[in-house]
Image 1 (cartoon, rainbow, N blue to C red):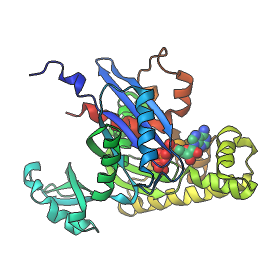
Image 2 (image 1 turned 180 degrees about the vertical axis):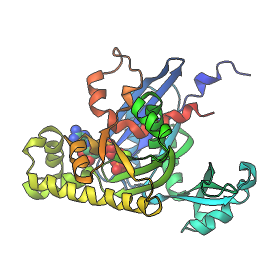
Image 3 (image 1 turned 180 degrees about the horizontal axis):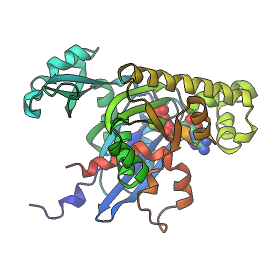
Image 4 (image 1 turned 60 degrees about the vertical axis):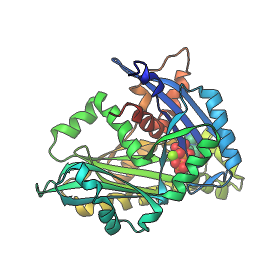
Length: 358
Ligand SMILES: Nc1ncnc2c1ncn2[C@@H]1O[C@H](COP(=O)(O)OP(=O)(O)OP(=O)(O)O)[C@@H](O)[C@H]1O
Ligand SMILES: [Mg+2]
């Protein structure tokens, strides 16, 4: 027995996305979670495109830079995959134990996953009894393309990082939101006290929107959609006739100078993407419409986005910041900075929470 194994067991979140590497480590004590280390290192454009590592030198260098900045306590990591490289399906199957389902999972996946089963890694989670039929249970099936997972693992390995856990961005988002829910009164009460209550977690990245709709706290719909902050940058480029980087700068530093046409076109696209998912969800869940949107991701840092989406969709929207429930030592971290970019760290926080799974 190793009395100090907990310390060695720490798992570091590495969110390898299209624009940056986000590394984050949490510690846990009786008083809650605390931020232990963190780094955000931008990636050159096109180093990772649609989950494919194009420039592995650039990515492993950025990983080394992130390690340098964060100085994490371990090299064991969890990363997330998203987009087309992962298929997530909820299925209803006859009640059985987790052990029994292990031997059924390939058969089930064959019916639900449009890829060759040999090309994917399979995983599942039993959610619990199906509401309408107690003889059945809801199971989430997850199939990740092997080549994508292997590629990520390889590049992590090149930077001396050992992959211990592979997660999906939408699940990490849910885990981080649960953490917020346990301390944020309005979310918890809504989940538990009202009979039918649905909320949508919407993480707006640069290229992808991760959506997870929870009905009474249980995952009811997930989807990654190809839209995000980059679409606004492109609208700015077109409208102001400037390059990508200049448009990014304008978006982040001088938002009020952006032509209202560019912003309007971005919102038209964004709302139609979100509505598409809400409609999909509503088709099977007409009795419990989505009552709140919880926004995160770098794309949610756009000024007034909560007001805009609340108004355009007729559903109240909130910005979520994980650092409102995670302790941060002001001697180690810049609180004002974390307050500003917090919503962008929901997926890394959800990943880092895997360290404390039973
Ligand atoms: N203050 C800001 N105002 C507006 N947009 C911002 C701001 N800060 C960051 N962004 C935008 O957020 C996006 C990056 O967000 P995030 O880090 O969540 O994406 P990502 O995880 O790298 O992308 P993806 O998950 O799509 O691969 C970029 O499009 C960036 O321009
Ligand atoms: Mg992301």
